[in-house]
Length: 107
Image 1 (cartoon, one colour):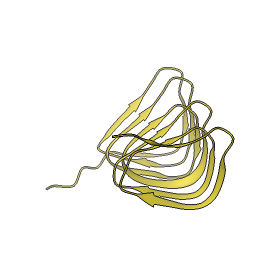
Image 2 (cartoon, helix red, strand yellow):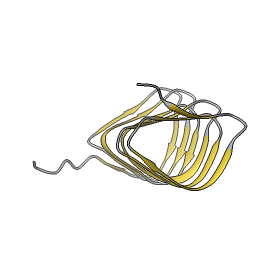
Image 3 (cartoon, one colour):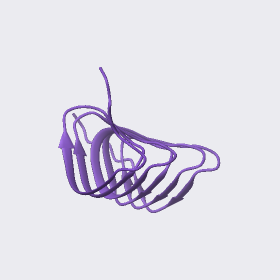
């Protein structure tokens, strides 16, 4: 399945929601709510609260993140905000400021 890509010169101010994977290379401000995965590449800047299944961050994210599966912070990323997910990976060299909540609800 092909990903939807927000290119490096694109700026979106508003709310994004959908059922497919999203790759951000540009700038998104507002709110992101996805059923699948969000990938913020190295050039990506997100100033939004994020709710999705998986988040992979290589760029900059300012906002709270709620993931139902996993949040992965790559080596050169910068994240400011609270992160709630059952699995959180923070690579050596990542910059993170906020609170972590890994409370897994009983199924």
